[in-house]
Length: 414
Image 1 (tube, rainbow, N blue to C red):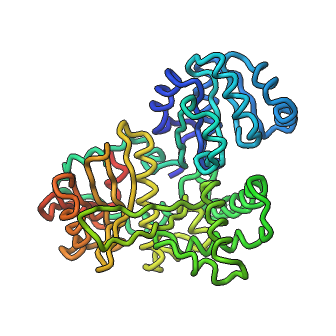
Image 2: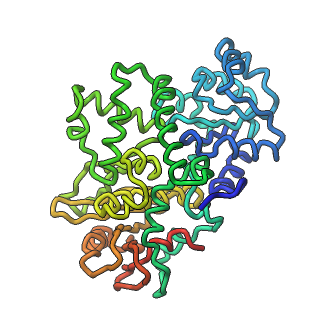
Image 3: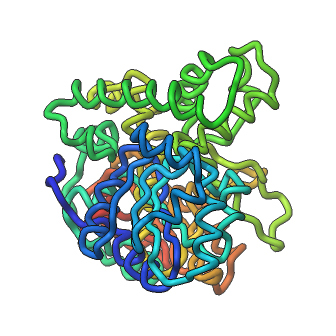
């Protein structure tokens, strides 16, 4: 599963389009997800000068005189880790308002500017934001993903695939961060993830907010890893700490801001009145989650409860990563009602077509596994495209009414 040294990313076509008509383009995503590599590669092709705001001298110059710093930049520039100097956003706005030539500035950022309204608003209408995730499985394999198109076309066929078994647990534990995948052994990858989490908490959180209980964040993140793919329960997260629920809620938002966790919102429908309206919590990467839980591939495969949770997060993140490079906007939700019907991931394309994904760690599928998807079908009506139970088996088969059992490895096949 070790990635090649240089490989295309799914978002590259979208980035090229954005640079052709937007004055400012921001690639945002977690540290070490490949933003710098991608920005430098695209910038080299287009003649961009490169400036890294992690560099102490460059950052000091930008902080001392943001307007002057931007005014003296070359015609086209890459500004790496731009969140290190928030005042640059206003200076960039001034420069762009004077000259709105497309593709002037290519930015990267490791904090989610969508959660920092002042930063995002300062460049509203001038900046396109593109999310870069860690590697998708299809990127690791060097394949062009086809799953999302097949899902919305309901074009899955009866076929045999190789069951992954323990190799699925290996993929989950390996995660998607390029630097971790480049390490030779699972033990060395786990060491990288431990160092990564410590660096993120000690460095990036300190820069974003002054919090009194910084030592609580690693423990909170480990607790969140144990709740991945479950409904967000702030009371449970606050239990081990002498901190209030609002404080824990703020801390979760901080972890979201640096892409370590994220919330999957509930799906709503006027046709159903008994829907649960609580978001689900997902870790941003299963390599991080497994390391926080102290699970290697063997231990994860034996712990069926943990495997089920991490597999759901793994599938959700793979779908999100593939959607980041898709031509159509795809929005993600989960579905659950008060009668116990649920669908792990609900995908909505173009605001019209709706599809559902249920995730099972088991090697078999029965008609009962489709009960949540059938409930979703009745709620969606004609907008329903397809429902899939992804499982660790070897047979893809139709269960009627655009419902399918599909081996999980099909997710990243061409």
